[in-house]
Image 1: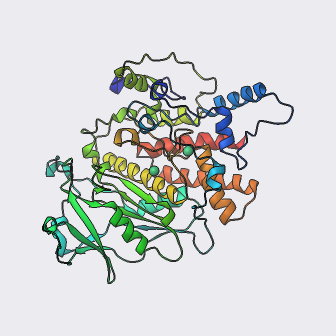
Image 2 (image 1 turned 90 degrees about the vertical axis):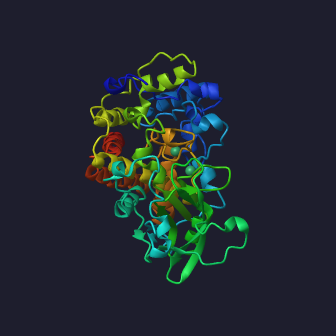
Length: 454
Ligand SMILES: [Zn+2]
Ligand SMILES: [Zn+2]
């Protein structure tokens, strides 16, 4: 790893790492990225009478100016885009034309959050399933799973303008009483029920293949339960879990999933438990925003025998640039040690995934244009390197859905919405600045707001 505690993150990587080429990832060029954020899908710099070369040059200049605010996806070895470099981009225009996309309406605009269901005495065997098995019990003391109340507050800022409410009915895990049909179901812990009032959904459980937890719950069953409980005025419903989850026989685990078309998502905090960081070899010195430290990115590429490129400092990478501000907000921070810091870390990771999954409910696909909260991820190590903000393309989608489609704003109104949303998120970050991710996000937003005010 790059010089650990003494790394100053002096040089920031604003483009993809040299590994991108090796992986065969062809990032949409400057002109295409600008076009992707417009409704018409055309580069706004292209005008009659301008030569293709002139447009290209102008686009590159604008892209260079934007890079210290919105750098490229890092694309380090083993990242999601390495495995799937041809993943198709979703521009604002293709998002607008997506027939499956649910639109916000005055009748259906509320985001519901359901906290982790209560484990009833009949299924007390589930107690402890949420604890990492490899950590001695006394070392797990003082860890507190992400608060549902705080998650709701973050959602209110991130999806500013929408009402965010707790799901009104209490949810409970109860015994599933159907007699087991087949021999393999003889394990009485194979099913549990997820109940509200007198309604109950069967949830499959299985032993966790990688043994990080005792057992895990089936994600598809949880999503089915969420669909069945969707309130009439819900735009979407997020179900929070503290148990580990799986999707099918092929996977080890899954942290979150959305059935966007059905307007539901489930997010589990289990794998984000900081006690697992050692197994995942998480480098605490280089989580976002310091994941953009060039020395760090190079060190991961060198492992794959790739020579680092020379650093060309962007003239726009000033002390005022959003990414530099974000890095400066945390560069002096020491490695996490206290329970409070670890719990903040746990919360920040979980809500970053929560807004990502809800983004799918808004019809947003994974983002390949920039480093962005809507990027796909291949695992924990990549997860913590991704930013909490929406890139220029994804932000246009959310702003269009909320400001234009729901609030019927015009272009100027949408721009005001974007600033108001940044201010609301900055307020949340200010209250949570004891957590590095939010301290950095708050600083990034201040830099961005300053750019938008000139
Ligand atoms: Zn996703
Ligand atoms: Zn994006």
